[in-house]
Length: 166
Image 1 (tube, one colour):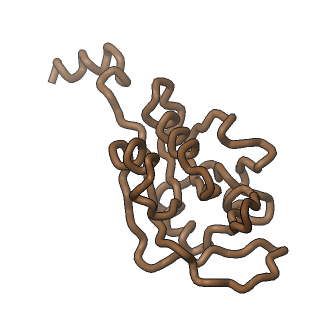
Image 2: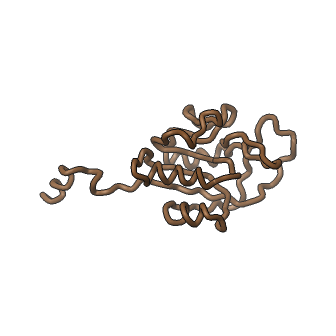
Image 3: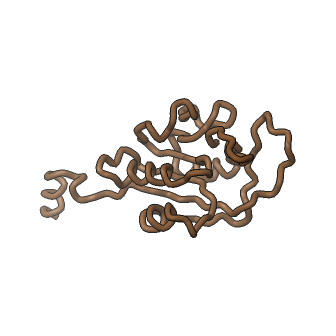
């Protein structure tokens, strides 16, 4: 479920295991896979590398297993879509490596998201063309959830009047 990219021999187009995706899809009912290819998309609606998810407006409820080589823009996009000025998305879930020493973790994830550390390591599914061994993952993973918060202003004047009348 990640966009295909090969940099310095890194594998960044491996798919999210179906059971892991299903566990969170049951809970959140995702509407779009933000970083996928046709072979590994978990939803009918997805953004491919050519569509560049970082240049799209994120709406609905998104699932993202981004390329791990540069996570700052993916976290920033999820934050902006859910808690930014426009708040176009209800919820954004990202499957990320546990890298608590990085700026994106301390400046975007830690203050604004819910974090669930996954027990064990996630064995991603290799792409069809992969000829190497299925090695044990090098790092642990975490689920990061950015969720739009409801503000009193979201209800408008009638909502305020209704509360005062109770």
